[in-house]
Amino acid sequence: MGKVKACLFDLDGVIVDTAKYHYIAWKEIANELGFDFTLEDNERLKGVSRMTSLDILLSIGNMSKTEEEKLALATKKNDNYLTYILKMGPEEILPGTKEFLELLKHEGIKIALGSASKNAMTILNRLELTDYFEAIIDGTKVSKAKPDPEVFLKGAEALNVEPKDCVVFEDAEAGVEAAIAGGMKCIGIGKADVLGKANLVVDGLHKMSLQKLSLLND
Image (cartoon, rainbow, N blue to C red):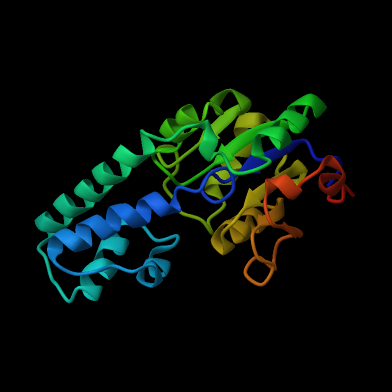
């Protein structure tokens, strides 16, 4: 790797925390079905697809549903989630994010988003961050989930930067593995015991600096 030429960011847990809205939306479905869904239960849904999440939820409630009923419930959950997303504003951007994006822009380092979320554009627009990203690769543009590197490789390609010159910012283990599989360096956002495979782990983007980024230059 030469100098870092591009930074690719996951969305949820790195730039913004939408996990709480997913939880509330699932909890509403559970309550409608007549059982409770706790934060502890919610841990089991992290990084899992919508339909698999619903299966886990139904097993917690000891219920079975037809495929048709399941699709209706999954759609309803997404509608619930979107009502919260559409009320979001720039105040929900995680600390230090905007400042770090400004720094990168100033240094001429390219910026892309690599997220599995199909609602990524809606969220970025609500946060007023869309203009910072030269490429946005979201759930509408990829077919393979992380740890497959597809989302980050497409980001690098859109920026016209070699994977070896890219640094990925991720808060999930599967995302870190995706970055490594794609031949990129990775900075983990969160806890070192979970993200130990990353080249560097920080608490959040408020702890990032160009100096720390330059540690990944060879």
